[in-house]
Length: 112
Image (cartoon, rainbow, N blue to C red; front, side, top):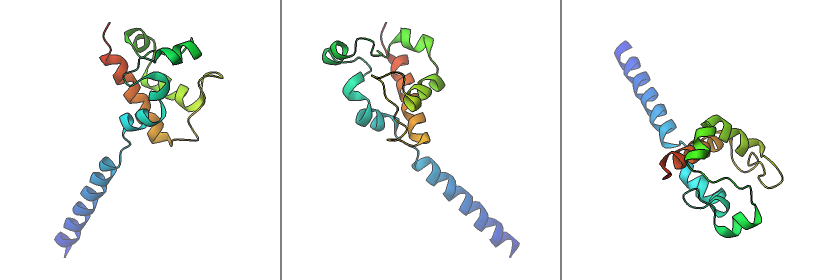
């Protein structure tokens, strides 16, 4: 009986872990949906956005050198100025963190 109970607990725990990983937010998909229009598909804003928002961030090597995932998350969550609004009403905390991580990865992949 104890073995059966132990086996059930192990299976339940492994299933919960699998579901947790399976439901992790997709940072790229969320970026594409919420950020790509202004910041571009690979973190390089289109000319129209640069003209409209001259201080718009470009996710390149210089960007990553100055920012951590946490600092990016803070900007996405709280906003920065009238041009960069908060996204806390559009995404939950896990989604915001996934986007911040994806943005940092974009910057890390940027060519000098």
